[in-house]
Length: 339
Image 1: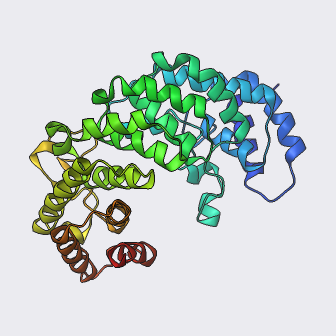
Image 2: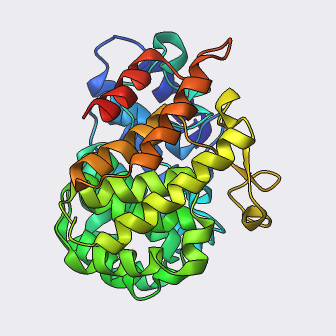
């Protein structure tokens, strides 16, 4: 009782970062910190909600009192948050731990990885039960990113995913391009059937204004999602994505984006794009190009010109003094060419 929420959180992280069997002690700490959650910010290098949730998840502590309070705080933040673009929502989804501040409070820096990247199952169960009643009050972009934390975290929730489909599907044009991509990607990755989502996303992607703003990651993400889900009957969609991808690759070659894909591809349409930097987006790297190729293979869509330009793009990248991407991603990419 004499310790602040910040201090208790820092103790929890210090303990969780060791190999000591500290389950019982963390259970007691969870009970003590639950009433003090409002003292903690969402993120940061000192005591914060993301750090606390990681500590409990890393050690398998599932305090009912703490879980209840974490879910309440999550919903409060989700309802209040107003994002401009999808990536903004990372801030509010504190139960996803792949964030810059993690080096300060987790064992990522020590082990060069995070074995626990998302919250424990009990938190997701409680959040799913509660948040479904508040979806109408949550921004559609926030809904999509929240759903990603479920799908990427390996947590299936059919009722929640169906409710999000209904909530977001009605206003899909209000999503930013990244949000549209993730909307359909979530269902494919989680293997949740929802034909209506794919119909809605296909129609929106094929809008002239929407297709024009689709960046390389968006094109590859949508192509992969539809192919992975087996929704390959829409020839118009894959032809549109393929044609747009070809233009993006050609621009990438002209602008020498193969030297470094990060925020290197300029197009006037990205002026004012809140996910771009100086009207530049990430060009194709081996991972996004690999996803596109895999999507084309699964779709059984042949485009000789796209394949030719993709080979040229990768070849130019590999000729640079510094490798285009790590070997694992390059193998994944050439696997797509081979297939």
